[in-house]
Length: 104
Image (tube, rainbow, N blue to C red; front, top):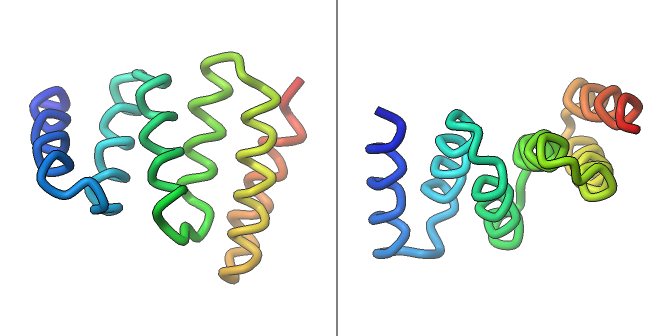
């Protein structure tokens, strides 16, 4: 099911590469399948296009953690904290701070 959804998202992005909602959806489907390298690429592209409120930074941090890229994960979580605070999401910022504190 998820593989089929990924193909649908990719076709939609081929038609409209600037569609941030579709790109975020694709990244989420890739995360579900534990395709962390692809998910992190899509999330980084998404973050370059969208004014994210923090959620995508957290997902990127998780993907990078799973890839063993801890320094990059730390940066993602720090950026997520800043975005969450900017958009009035202190609970999300605290969650990212806990994840950041747990990194080696």
